[in-house]
Length: 108
Image (cartoon, rainbow, N blue to C red; front, side, top):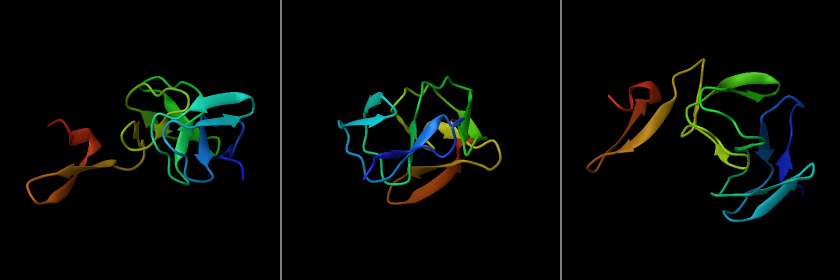
C-alpha cells in the first residue's frame, strides 16, 4: 500500500494512506521525506516548504494559512495551520480539566 496520496496537482499537502511512524522515510514522486513526528492515517504531510502566512492548498483550493514555517515532510494540522474560514481551536490542559480556546486567542 502506498504511504501518501496527492488529491490535486496544485496541492501543497499529501494525505497519509496509513499510519506513518516518526523517523521513517517515505517517498512520493521521487521526493523522500523523513518524518519528524508520527502522522496518523488521513492527516496531511507538507509536499513542499510552506512559509508562515502562506495559503495551504488541498483539493486545489486554500484550506487555511500556515501559522509558522512548515518544512517539506512535516505534518500539517492545527498546531501549524489556521483555517481562514472557521475558528481553529487548540486543546489546553489545566489543573484536572481540559478546555478549548480559539487559536486566535491562544496567547491572550
